Image 1 (tube, rainbow, N blue to C red):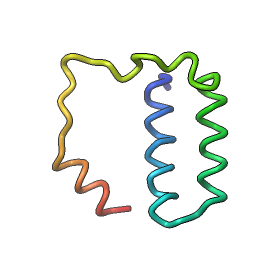
Image 2: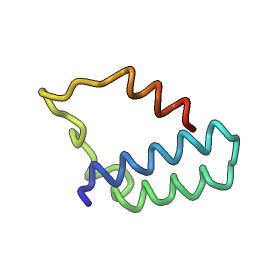
Image 3: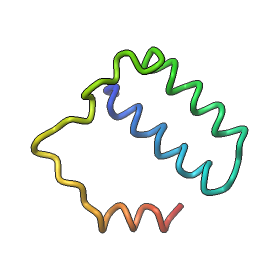
Image 4: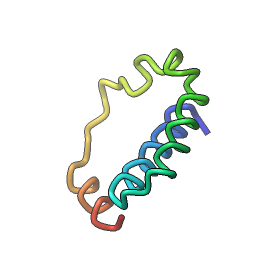
Length: 66
């Protein structure tokens, strides 16, 4: 799995934890993100893609399932 996909997966998990107000889960996910990105050192421009178009409808569907 690519770094961007791993980070994106963890960010999705983080949003679920925040919505359910589970602070223990939030802390664990932050630790995983920091370890994965070397405290943010290797994350610069990882989501930069000129051809990417955010699908707002899909985002809403995913958010409603959480």
